[in-house]
Amino acid sequence: MDHTDPDTLRRASRYAGLVGLVFLVLAFLSQNPPFYSDASNAELLRWVQAHPTALYVESVRTGTMMVLMVGFLAVLLWRTGLRDPLRSGVWALLGASMAIDMVWAGVYDALAFAGRHDIGDSAVLALATLTEQMTFTDGFLWGIAVLVICVAALRTRTLAAPVAWLGVATGAFKVLEPAAQVALNKTSEGITGPLGTVLLVFWVLAASLTLVIRPGSARVGVADVEAPLQGAGHDRG
Image 1: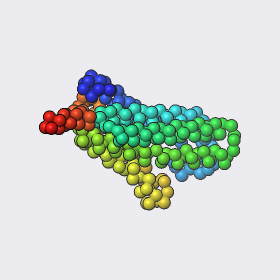
Image 2: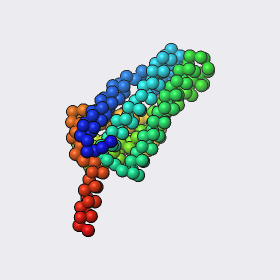
Image 3: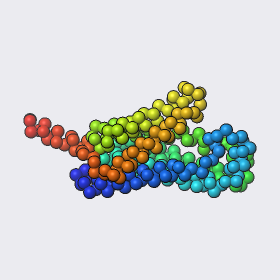
Image 4: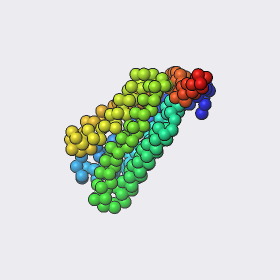
C-alpha cells in the first residue's frame, strides 16, 4: 500500500474501523458457558451435555474474533509506516496470538464432541478447564503488539493522541496482567481480567470510530518522515 494515496488510506481505514465494530459486536455475543463461574463439576457436565451447539458457536466466534482483531491491527500498523524489525516482530506476535486462538476454538469443538458422545466425565471436565484457562494465554502477545502500534501512532500522529494513549494503556495493562494477577491472587483468575477487557473494548471502540469518521486523519507515517530527513541530510552534504 502507498502512504501517498489518500483514497487507499481512507478506504482501508474505514474498512478497518468497520471490522473493529464487528469485533465488538461479536464480543458481546458470548454463549455464556459456566466455565468462568463458581459452577460445580456436576453443573458444568450438565451444561456441556445440554449445549453442544452453543459450544460450536463459541468456537466459530473465538476464531472469527481473532481474525478480525488481526485485520484491524494490521491496518493500524500499516498507517504508522513502521519498518522492520519492529514490523516483523508485531506480525509474529499477531500470528502467535491467532494460532493460540485457533487452538482454543478447536478445544471448544472437542468439548462439544465429548459432551455429545458420552466420552467420560473426566475428559469433559479436563477440556472445560483447558477452555477456561486458554482465556488468559493470548492477551500478553497481542498486548505487546497493541503497545508497539500505539507508541508508533503517537510518534507519527496516525491516531488521535487520546486514542493512542488509551491503546498504550491497554497494551501495557495486558502485558503486565498475567504477572500482576499471579502476584495478587496466586492464580490466573481475578479482577485484572475484567479490567483488561473493559480497557480493550473502550480502545477498540474509540479507534474504530476514529477510523470510520476521520479515516484520512493520518498525516504521515514513519517511512514518510524518514525519506525527507534523509534527503535533507544529502542536500547538506
